[in-house]
Amino acid sequence: MQKVPLMINGELVQSATSSYIDVTNPADNSVIAKAPCATVNEIQQAIKSATQAFESWKNVPVTERARLMMRYQALLKEHHDELATILASETGKTFDDAKGDVWRGIEVVEQAMNVPSLMMGETAENVARGIDTYSYIQPLGVCVGITPFNFPAMIPLWMFPLAIACGNTFILKPSEQDPLTPMRLAELFKEAGAPDGVLNVIHGGKEQVEPLLTDPAVKAVSFVGSVPVGQHIYRTATSNMKRAQCFAGAKNHTVVMPDANKEHVLNNLVGASVGAAGQRCMAISVAVFVGEAQSWIPELAERIATVKPGLWDDKDAGFGPLISPQAKARVLSLIKEGKEQGATCLLDGSDFSVAGYENGNWVGPTVFSDVTTDMDIYKEEIFGPVLCCMAVDTLEDALALVNNSPYGNGTSIFTNSGPAARKYQREVTVGQVGINVPIPVPLPFFSFTGWKNSFYGDLHAYGKQAIRFYSETKTITSRWLEGDIPSGPNLTISMD
Ligand code: NAD
Image (cartoon, rainbow, N blue to C red):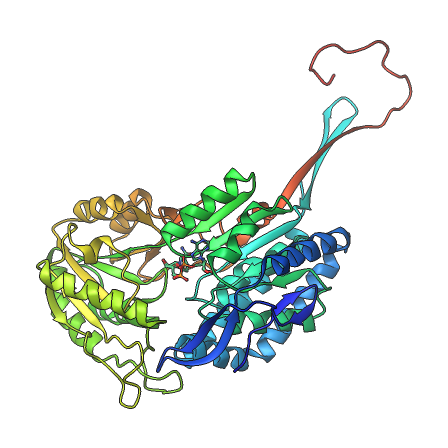
């Protein structure tokens, strides 16, 4: 049985631990590898290695750091299929979707290649007589990333390439449920020429995260995962005087106006709701139909019913199994509660399984209508292939509903009305808005800007905000004396 190595100071090392977590194939729950719970000593070694590597890495010219990212981008593209295969076998995602997971990460590496211009500061000449002011962007030191199971390529790649391109060093603690993909990402980073210690990877669960949140050498913590863990990590990291950005859970609504193009709406909602088995933080889990658009709900359920889950290498599969038996049990229990609490179950995927893989974590596509805000299927993030359909009379009602949600990750509106779209984009209290685009995940030259309970912190992932998150600004005020030296002390705060 393959034991997943750690990466410490550029070396792949087998942990000295006796405690391991099974990495499984979610299609049948067979064990495919064992992830070590790194020891305290190993975590300290990773912190030490990152601390020492920072002393030289911060002095490597920004152009050379950018070139490392160029080589890394080329290697990731070369190994795209291989990475997607590893990713699909440990997550169950279909091969094409796994390729998409890797690709959205490669796009962030492409953004990191632009680091020389992204790290340019500001200048102003002659701000007072003979005085110029300019700023530099400098790295912070050791940064940490804690990542979830659902995008094992994209989310680690949201973090370490940009942090490292800025001149920092990094410790990644990937999800214990699918550590093989991030490990391969780390190996390829070394192959691209990353110096030893610039990227370290440790494995395990919450016990392995804790020391990273309290060690004074760690300057910044990036986290993506569930709300309770995000809140805990934000509180612990900030109370230990670190900066933190914590991306958390979501409940994303789409609003369907009656003037929208019906065909476009139905086609888009199928993939946005049940794609990746609904295990996307930007999945559409609530569709709010306004006025006459409510009559489209049965047809939407019929279309979603045509999507068949299957194995990752089955070309006809629309999506794969859920990540674990626990995730499946949770989703099935929420579906049951939805029925008991009075929602109409138009399509029930509770009893779905794939022939020969009956032990897998399968849940078929599921659609509820007549959902109300007091039901658990509305209040909880289901994180499964379940769409809740709701009905309201007006755009104002839809806005009030969405704005009352404690989450604010993503939302979308389908309409042919410019004024309706503009009202929605202006008034909705959600950080990422799609207009006739169901899942509005921004490309990496923008930032990933969740709000409310979907994000704790202020500077978001990738884009210019990530450069600010992973750096300090140093502002220099300079005077070079020429001719007569001003006489006498200046006892005021003025620069003249
Ligand atoms: P999770 O919170 O269970 O785990 C995330 C990471 O935190 C893992 O590395 C895990 O080992 C670690 N962890 C777990 N418990 C911990 C604890 N008590 N203390 C410290 N670390 C701990 O999340 P998950 O199930 O892997 O991922 C699914 C969740 O992630 C969903 O809620 C989803 O919405 C969210 N997510 C959010 C975004 C976003 O951008 N907002 C993106 C992807 C996923």
